[in-house]
Length: 92
Image (cartoon, rainbow, N blue to C red; front, side, top):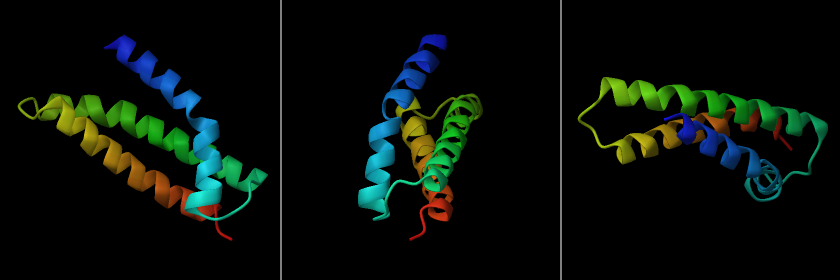
């Protein structure tokens, strides 16, 4: 399980810069600023905590459900929360 977290964290860090650029230009149509960079980092930190804590909790609480389904559910929940937090910082 620990290797899963290490691999996930490495992938999470590698996608930060492209994700920030695409979030600025394509999702919100804004330019990069220190304010939205800070908000983006906050949103991603919240996303990481949600994914690292919610997945093991759901696997424990719902042992009969497929892990793949639970992973997609956690990504969906974390993505929605990430978008809502980014909305605050990426206003035009």
